[in-house]
Image 1 (tube, rainbow, N blue to C red):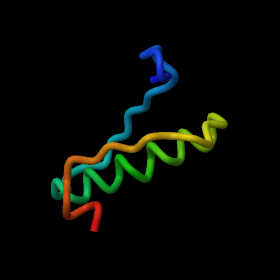
Image 2: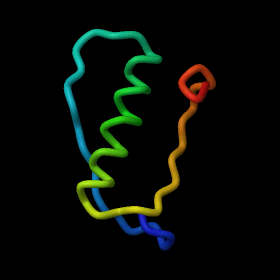
Image 3: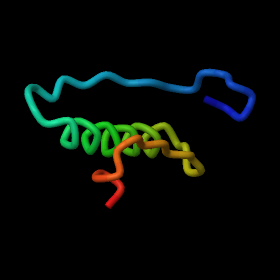
Length: 54
């Protein structure tokens, strides 16, 4: 979303069966990939898993 809350882009991806941490990592990876491909260079990433951050 923009700083005004407007929708920019979204994605879905079937990752099959995996752990919660693996799902979070896939979401971070694919989200950054989509952002880069869309031309977004300045983003704010929010992750709710301390394990993934480490």
